[in-house]
Length: 110
Image (cartoon, rainbow, N blue to C red; front, side, top):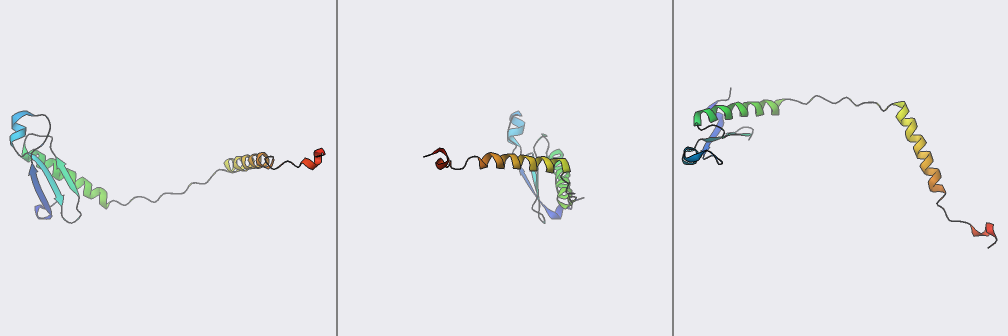
C-alpha cells in the first residue's frame, strides 16, 4: 500500500463526453509517486473518490512492474541443418559472382 505522504495528488477536469456534471467538477485524478516519478491517471468515473482509488491501484501496479526484474534470456542454438543450408547458399552465390568478372578477349582472337 502506498502512503499518501509519498505521492502528489492533482485533481483536474476530465475531457470528453459526459455533460455538464463532468465539465464543471474536477473529478479526474493524477497521482505522481515522488520517489520513482511514476504517474497514474484515472478519468473514467464521475466521482472523484472512485477515480482516486483507481489511480492508486494503477500506481501500485506500475511500481510493482518497475521493481520486477526481467528473466535472463537463454540463447538458442542454431540447428546444424540451418548452418549447412547457409554454407550451400553462400557457395552458390560465390560461384555466381565469380562469373561476373571481366572477359578475356585474347582467348577469342582479338
